[in-house]
Length: 354
Image (cartoon, rainbow, N blue to C red; front, side):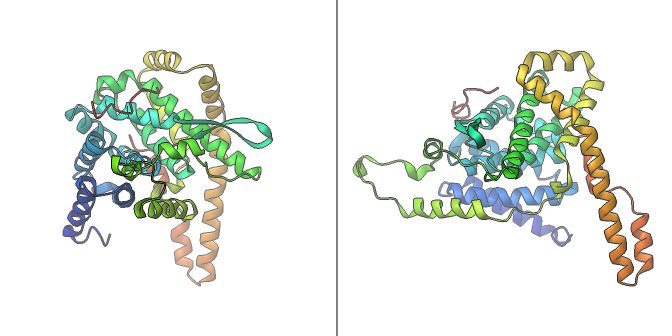
């Protein structure tokens, strides 16, 4: 509210983000900071973002076309901003991408990064796959919800390329959901809840400063910028996650709701697309996800009831019966409002450059 109360503040925020995205001298670290600002701004001021979403998407497209970030956390941050915009207004994002003829290339690159990584070994010697991008639960959740929002868009508002690729969209969402489930499993079994890239994938994620000029061939010394970025990467691993309006959204319930909307609107097309795009393992994963919905709904209701009871008890303890009465009659939560809103791997590393 304080940001929106002064119109010039929103313009200043957009100019700051624009300068970082467009400046030739901005590093991947600068880009991460700008993306974090954009993400918080979009999600926190969702009802007032229609004016700025096209501009934000244009910044993303141009940055990917001219100087696509190489460092994993920077590339992840860019797509998280795109996911935030999709959650707030998917039709507007898709319309902007179509106007720039960038829809196919953006989603190809995004889907490539979702599955990029290397095999690894999990607890008890179980084979796993270490992701290069979207390593943390917060990364996966936001992108999962953002992509899911596309399924809630009416068919007539979808570009043909997106409409024909919805099956692959579901496959990407299932990858995020599977990874999130694995993170929880690893955390419960004493393994680090985050995903750490292997040495090989970490080497692939260097920024522009990783290149060695002809005059410096053979030099093993790290530049100051590289040392700074290494420290920043370590700090990011230990950083406290930023509070977000989507924290209370259950990604599985959100996905199942929009998927059901998609199936209801286009039953024949949905069946065909899902059958063609999903492999046996993905179909099994989809069935497991949908089977978990009743349990998750029950747990959510219990959590909401408990939160309500605690709030009423706190209000009564503070000597405010009227406050307790107000809480008892409170309307639907922001989560319900959000969840009710309408809302392939590709060899595409150089897609934008081409």
